[in-house]
Image (cartoon, rainbow, N blue to C red; front, side, top):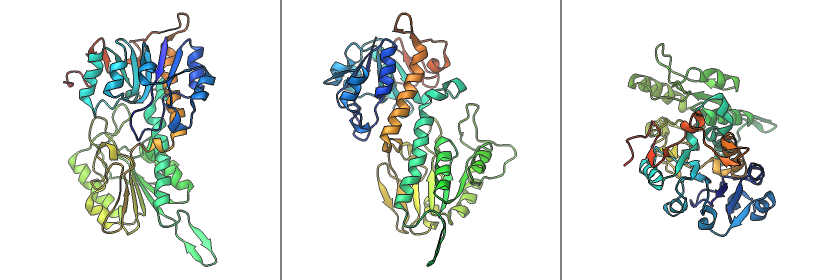
Length: 379
């Protein structure tokens, strides 16, 4: 049973799908682990560290992927790498099926089982496999650090002989994993923190971290799906929420947006008019920039400074800005996912198609698109 860890092809992707710690575990499960040379460079993991853990080092993707039964990656492989994966193999990665639906059909045509790790169901048993949570946690933390670095003032209140420095005011959109970590980090740095979310249940979580909950009162509408994700709200709710936020945002120094809706473009939460109302020197960090952005002025991979002096940070792959920890957590997510699918006696991979963690993440099987959310939608 061969496990391949290819080097990521995207220039802005420093993460890697396995660490020496997880390689040791795979070897213990009976796997032959093959890592493409340089795969761990972006996360400061040397080829020698992988060798010491029991892996072999391949000089190319072709050698790493040759005859592999299992392929772990961070991002979707490019066409060249996909063509090197044998029929019947299992590929597990962050595949972005909603954003690249045509590619899902390519996985089916290649005859592989494609596992989208970001589709991991939100059930208790799968918490240790949840890549969205592990990576969003780091992204929320890093967003505050990036905002603080770009901010022209201090974050906490400071009482000095020369006078008092007022604390920064931080406003967070979305109280999911990234948002809650952003709230906690900003609070630790001494800021006055407020946050908003369409889910009523998020209010207690925000307040438990020391933040103030900002939300439109609604007796009959809650923005939470059965799976625990945020859902799109009615036009009436959006208008009332926008009015409330527009008044609140004028007084904020730092705004961090984290709102995403699965399968949809990111909702616009900070309008151009709101940006114009903000003080010069204010900072916006748009964590949803890769899915269209929560602010129409943000640009993927760019820093935008508006005419009124507001800086909008549109970093892509925010979790990847902490590659050592991001790779470590992601690698453990993969390990926790695949371990129950290994036949310990036969030392072979045996996917359990009755297991929610498999059926909830599998996009393709036996040459067909099988995920309910995508069936019939790929070309």
